[in-house]
Length: 229
Image (cartoon, rainbow, N blue to C red; front, top):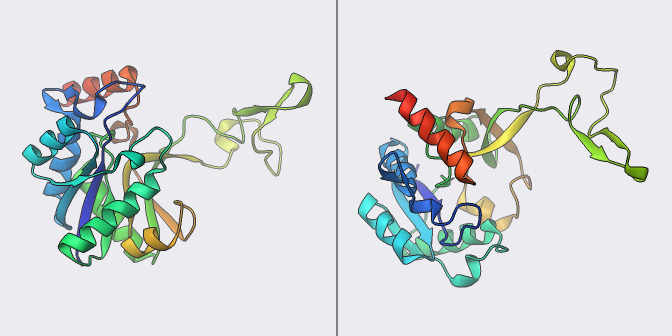
């Protein structure tokens, strides 16, 4: 199978300006994702889709192939799924057909090669359209997550079938992470949304599931990397 890795990194970021190339432990954030993709045995080529010249420079220097993303696909309101489609069509035009589309967001720098390989294999193993990565959730909609109802009252997000008085008794739930998304070009081009087909998952430990959205996430990633040294 021919698997291509894609990293989508636009220039605008309100939560942490310039985060996609912000130095993390001495290396641009984007480079972590490129390096992991290049080190993954099942990945044949790595592409970075961006609208930003500084990000493009880092992408090329890191060893990725650059895809110039149109401005209309790089705004705060542009669905990333449309950027996925644009990248797939660009690659098909310039590099031909391929079998596996693997998205590795730049905001998850702590992922391992083991996570990328596991997602690729899991999707094929269960014949799913999409494999996402998950990590154990800190809160449960069955136990300690509530929603506002009429009259400023609150209720559980999901009422359990029977009374749950301990967290341990609640169904196990997971957070979706941005560690890896493994699918096919055909699924992205012919569907819309992660859950528009058969979805499977791999579980990633929290230490590798940090998703950098703001400076606090960034500092957490720094602390984890420093602890590993």
